[in-house]
Image (cartoon, rainbow, N blue to C red; front, side, top):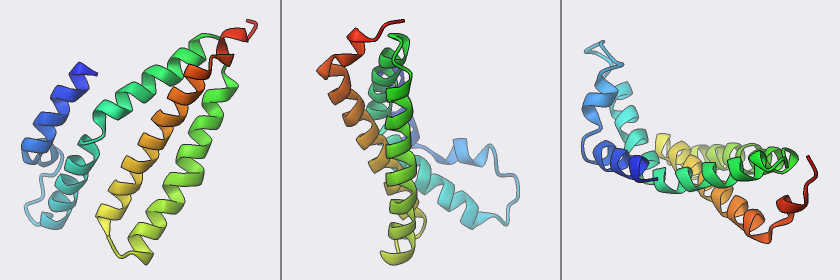
Length: 127
């Protein structure tokens, strides 16, 4: 979490060099701008993402492999994809809508994983 926290500070403060590394076409200004926007927005969730990864992998490592699958399915397939569509097309947020959907889905993913982890049923799983 500390590493991702530090990386997020760098990505929020100066995303241009990191996105520019992958875009060599000087005419791709819109691609560069969209990449910068996405990197900035998504970087705000890095600490939350790190916690979610730890929680889900703890459950997974304890032998409960089905629960992380369901958490992923709900967060990414049932929340992130429809929300990205709605925010992009209905709310007309364009690329920011996709980024906000990722941020929201990852936060939901983490909160769900934390709730399930704290509930402790993964401790009862026989391996």
